[in-house]
Length: 359
Image (cartoon, rainbow, N blue to C red; front, top):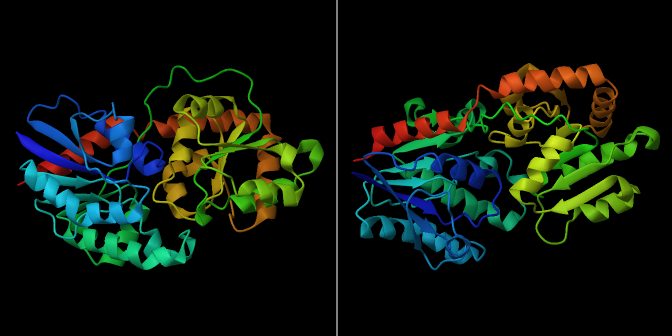
């Protein structure tokens, strides 16, 4: 029996893409002969529960939202927990992990935003600690897993690790293709946190450039608390075209994917870009930033724009929404493209790395 201590300190139930990846993969690792998984959880996750996790949870007593507590847990608590359960392997699935792991460690490093584009971190005071935590974990890891070839290239450049030390395991989709919505679609849907690289203010500037007669309603989810985009929309005079929903349940997000005319994703930097894949697999046309990682995901099935140019964003949105035939073709092409990415394949890919790495 191979026992894996999984570092769940960064997860609270509301951590976006990194938590989605872990949740989807680990839900597919239940009842695997020869494997046992123990989760070292933040107090928030322990209280909320994690029915997707295929093993028992240890409540660390540490709050993710209290960053000194969380950082102490990453640096010291994870290794202590691994030692206490006699783990054969540590998996750190959310970019951070111990600098001195007590067992071989697989680090899932989704991106190296702090190194490549530090100006996008929400607090300049957090740049150095983030670099130190990620850099220490990357050096200590026995193997690194990442989510795209674009992210892998960045990781090799930043960390100096050898190519053999970094494996790409693409995230996936649901694999369900037979229940694509046929309900009428309208408006645009966009989602993500409010970190600067998500580029939402520029998307709102683009929306303001579209004439009122053809301006779609834009729904944006993913914020916590007071949404800073509310003031941006007010300054631009487009409040009635912007629906800021905050943090939504999975069912609410699903409904928006299935009822929107298109997903628009204006990001400046990503490790993978789950909204592109999630839109494609639901038959929702995708309009997104022309950056290498999103080309890797969407290929020719989506339409692209320069995310630094509001006029270019506006023009692509107008052109796409005004062409029903193009929308129908994008829906079909997206469904076909999405079949190349599955969570089952992601789970098998991660497990294969575990097999090579465990002591």
